[in-house]
Length: 323
Image 1 (cartoon, helix red, strand yellow):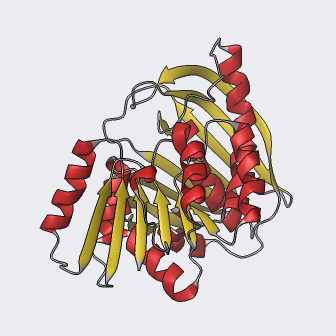
Image 2: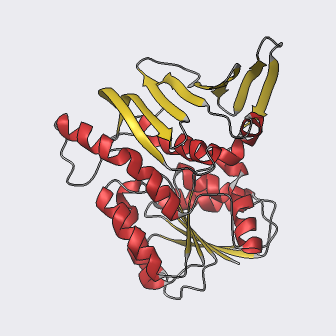
């Protein structure tokens, strides 16, 4: 099995950490322009108890003279350079499966270009939106065919960079019904954690064609625990949870009954990637949304962000400054 990992920063290292737990005999080719990042990857492999890994390190895709057949390619770079990297990759080889990080790109034109581009290849393209499988217990508590309201709220939790996860979850809860943005209210732009990138404070409300709603609300302020509040209400029932780090804690309340506790562990990326790869190798399928589905999710909010940044004087020649 040949796995190609392009981008070995924080998220790339978490992918690698998970991949190294797999017992399969595999070759892992890692590409990153930073030699220090490559060294971290090499050190991580050295610390691994799995001794059947063959690791190749490169500073660019062009350094790979003999690209073996690639079973799984993961691109874990920033969104701003992803378009060029995909083009370089497909000039070298056509992987069986390609996993992209969200947000996909910084330009809407790139989203549309690759929608058509991938149709020219047999590669199955997946996007690392994972929320539905991670909190499946809550999903199972919702009664079938009941209209519900879902609200995600918190202080500066990443309306730009994380909304797509909750949209994917909402879309799955509605049995993949058509969804659309009903309204949005943005208040201000703030600097993101990563230098050179920004976030938006405010809200977005979406609705399915059967009347289910999703409200995403990011408020100003500082929360050292970086908590996200999740509330789902239907008829006389409510689920209320707080997601902090890898813990999801809350309750389910039906009518006047006592509150039933909810407690779940959310897996880190380093605990997930290997399962996705196992599924792709054994089933030719995984739980991640494919590119076509993620493309539609991105297009729900990209035009809104684009307009707000433009109205606030940002130059968007290189795309929206979000990650």
